[in-house]
Length: 200
Image (cartoon, rainbow, N blue to C red):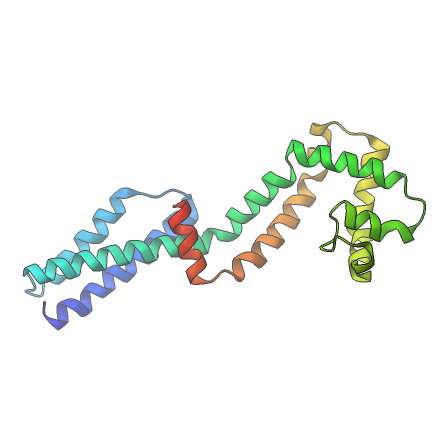
């Protein structure tokens, strides 16, 4: 394969990877025909520079596979935030989560003073710590600001699952998106590639 053919074949390979990633990020669908298009454009580009030997075909095939793999990795990286947010929200708004929160609300209603918050938080997984003495003041402050109100509302109102979802969905959606954005920003290319292999 002539050097000019090799260099120019990189262009459609790179463009194909970007196109694959963008298409998936906007549609959440993979289109098999795009793999054929990428391979064809790479081959035509190489052939147009008089590179028509067996070695050329092998290199073009490798370029096409690399382009698709890179495209899948880009797709996962660029769509990660929305995907993570969706899964977080599905978990947080599940019926199991509702039942657990209702039990938490009953337990919290029995607490008489704020000194008991760390124990409650450790037992009910509102802290990363499983021992009350290790629950930080910052965690307690966050609990009071974000969780206490919901627990009191759950206990006082005793909502149905449908009523609860309507009440908390917007708040949870916002929190899920924030957390998902943080996770997506921290995702490495290797991790994105691993997710692509597993899910795409």
